[in-house]
Length: 362
Image (cartoon, rainbow, N blue to C red; front, side):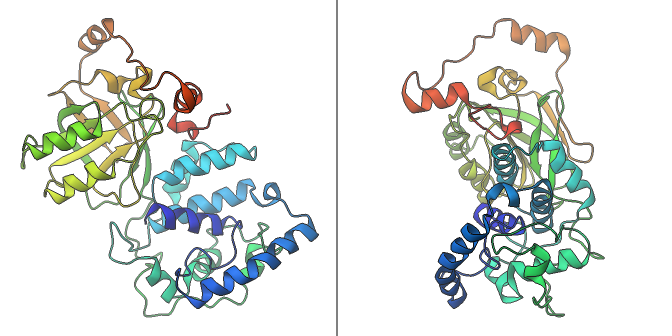
């Protein structure tokens, strides 16, 4: 699922938006009705003195993580939900995402890895029907408070279930993948964690030779020159695109799309300290911590190094002996930040790593 749909659905599952709002098409009567009722909903919240902190509980975030995995949601949800949780005093970590992913199947046949889109979800009852299905199967907590002033379960009481002939959301007995697609990897390349979107289509293990680029545009230029060959297992490493190095951790949508567009999806994996669009697909690992700008291991990868991505065992390793790696670190000089004054400089100096949601007030 794309990032906007992912976050909208997650937020509805947390109780922070009106029922159906995440799946109502922009040009639908339902969306217009929703907009008309928004004012009354806000007044109701004020009269009942219901605040975001009463809604955004630990259980609400658990609901969101479940929905993200059920729907094949964007890896950006990891960043956003950790940051939102921090803002309301809920301790949420990348390991919590892994814990949920280990027990929650991937059910939604949605783009970019599948064939349907959010308008199709709307056609079979929208997000409320999905949440009712999850509630009936004890996968989410219906007791959380919502912006309607009622609990999630109360909001869903009159919602009809999915039509029997729909094939967009698989039954629990026949999942696309028996566990979630969000995988947290660690290893010699990512001791502080990395995030993968592993649907199973791209396989679970990838080993290849590194091709290293210090910016996404350098990779695009290399690809256009024909330097990435079909049939050669290659791990493209795009670094200095993290929260500090970017700055701002840009999405690697252009590189990931270019790889698929060039017909290299089976031959090329992409790892980065940047992040990915919800529209990205392929063998992709992002959010590598520590990032290159901080002198993380990714800063010392060289062309031709062997890298293995093992999603089964959640490992991301650089296959270089300790002596060689130590020698590379000896002469390391940290690159200067791309900005030395102003807002982006202050951001780069204060931002936390991706595993902690890229917050700036820690």
